[in-house]
Image (cartoon, rainbow, N blue to C red; front, side, top):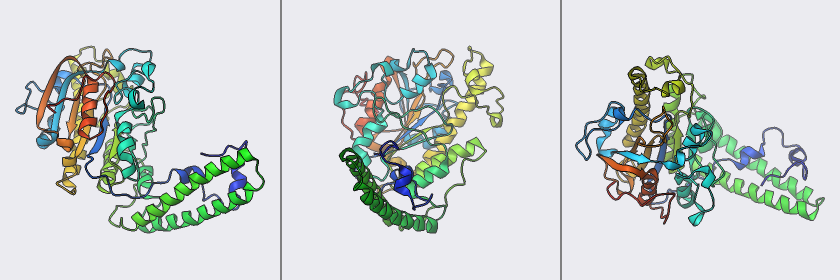
Length: 423
């Protein structure tokens, strides 16, 4: 809890500490490095907007012997780790005055904002990454990681009404995981300085406490609890940081090349998995209603207007180029995870990564025939197959399946009729 200026001046509290101490930053400092919980797979959620040209996404054959579509073809080299899922519908994402906003925010919850409440076990309206974080999050320094290529919007909800911000600057992501500082030596030095600053905070609040009312003393006590938590995190972070000698230096910041930005953000997730900073990560590559132009792909029209294709084959062709490019980024990330050794096998072997969109036909903003694929074989996922489901099968079934395979028990989830046994 932070104390407002009405009750206690932050300037008074920090007087003499200088500009180098910033309490919001300190309370958000990375928790301690911790050993990951044994048995939980890593979870990943990669979102792309505006759906997909479905006849260029969905393979024509089902089962294990299928031909990859043009959009999914980059994943063919990872066939054993790929589960293509088609035919699903997310009714919660349909309708409303702002279709693109509701499309993003209902992807991982399958609950319409108008229907959010505490629900069974207090999870209705929460996204599955945060449901998992309640169980898995304490085993790692960061309970979850939320990244993006473009700022704005939200796909992750820690409560039915509270979204989590998406970070688009890989430099900040690196700092949040491994501490401030561009190099190993700088990180260790800054962490040591932070410890002495926290000592000052405790002393300053102790002297102020004698002048405060009973209510303000309660507020200060709450504040000190936060300081103690930060102190504990810094101590553990410093202990862990001394062992992380093989890390690359921090990235310089968002590169001008958007493709490079996406790849660097995915690399941040890979590093987080590899160093057990978190086991849950989300990456929204491009936001809904994006006006981005993909000149590098020979596409001159902005993404959102192009997504209203009106069944024009020329626009479909341009959309396929963009959607295949998005698949290539996900493939590159998955391949990186396959190259990383884990306690058993490789990291991709022990991951469940949902790659998909919450829109079907972008021309009409529906959420039917959603393009979805699972990457990885964590939790006993079979991989190497295309599963097509009957009309109106809930998208929530796939989300329920991910929780089930991750070892996160939920009796009910949105409009799910149950996990998929065949995945």
